[in-house]
Figure 1 (tube, each protein chain N blue to C red):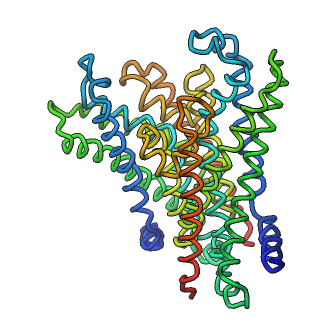
Figure 2 (cartoon, rainbow over the protein chains, first blue to last red):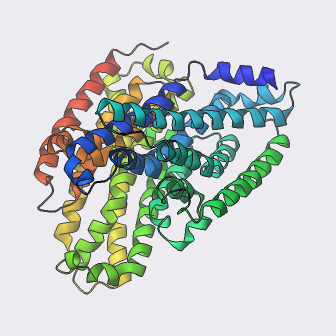
Length: 244
Length: 247
């Protein structure tokens, strides 16, 4: 398992994936900061917490559009290493347990998505300090909510992962990822959010605080169950996969 | 010119085995379907709002559809550009193509045309679907052709600048995930850019936001800067492709 992990990390070394993962959320937060400065009076005129305003300005576009799409980019990139030039047939003909390959690749995908969320959190704090926001940093909001969004996004990661492994054409997982991202903004505001995993991160990151997120515990339970179901299905298919 | 058409026909032949055509087709179908459902359930509520009372049904449809389409169209264009250029990278085909006695300018223009023609198809299909939505919902007013044609034309201009920019990015960057990420970050930030009149004109991702025909929106700026940036980025793309080293 350790060897596979080391090899998978080595493969990603020159893929520029970390640059994408770190710079994409940082760019959005910088835009959110600029927007906050531009409309400072409007956003803080009624005595709102400036840190919370910076968080909201950055998080709206991050969690609604960029985050689910970046998940698709990261996961397709991880699968592309093998999809490219039919590398699966060489990899799967080696005396390595297929299940381990599947699990390790998924763990790496989840870890990179986590780095993306961590980069977002760090960017909010750095941009907030740079634009001179006074007062203590509301870590409860800035740390906890993005982490909740991360856990709520695990089913999305698993769905895109299964598609990326299954189809060699990256347009399919990407198209599904993008196609299902945009309706999430609409679905999140309806009672059908529960059947739509793409709306979970939005609700986790923007749907009020931890207590008000009354769908909270249910969402996380559904996220976990969905993750397990999709992952297991993908795992079973991968282990039995023909070498083509 | 014949050489260009031949290259273009090969280009479309290559696209056949990829997911490009379904993507160009499904993207407006998805947006149209969502707008249809949105208006089917909320038309009366939206029409009853103070801000919408004076609007015709077609204007309301265009405004509601635009909120989704201004994001989905540039995302689609980004994927189309990346995938069309990636076809050559994935099969290591650039060196084969460029070692043939064909002009590099024509090769690049073929790729660019492939992206833009697919985008034109997507934009036109979107307009047809808007018409169908209007009929299905039984709008009381006759079709507002001027509005729909203006909206289509503005989208074609916005797509022109974005296709030129994304084609340039995708031709320079070998890794499609990087060019995709650049595009996705740009699209995610387009509403931020669009809040500043200057930035909205200068950044191709924000041009899509300016395509809604409305007196409060800088449509004239879109026409001027959209065409100008389209030409500039197309020229930059051709120039950099001519110098491209293939190995």
